[in-house]
Image 1 (cartoon, rainbow, N blue to C red):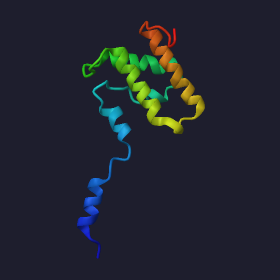
Image 2: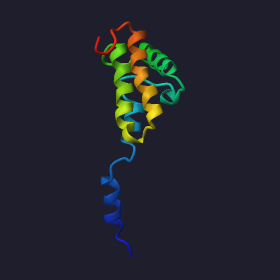
Image 3: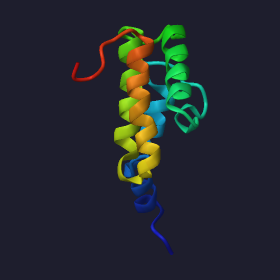
Image 4: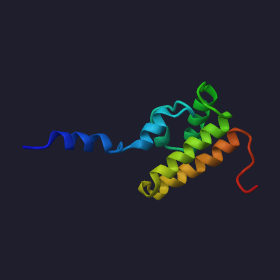
Length: 108
């Protein structure tokens, strides 16, 4: 017979498998459009993030910082699992966000 108490304790101690998804969905930064990071172009991703950041009433900093933070968080969490072409699009989305908010290009 199995020890129910031991297995119940294990289940409680086991961390959530996809904690980064939980952060993305419940973050105070902003409410994201579903599938934002799957959009086909850097411009579409940046525009979606900008819409979300500008409309958010939960964010704690300026819209640009919230949008950029969420994008960088996604890139960092996806890490090695991202195909190079997808990572390139997401990196380009950072440049596009800078343009949309009138910020200087990185390194310039």
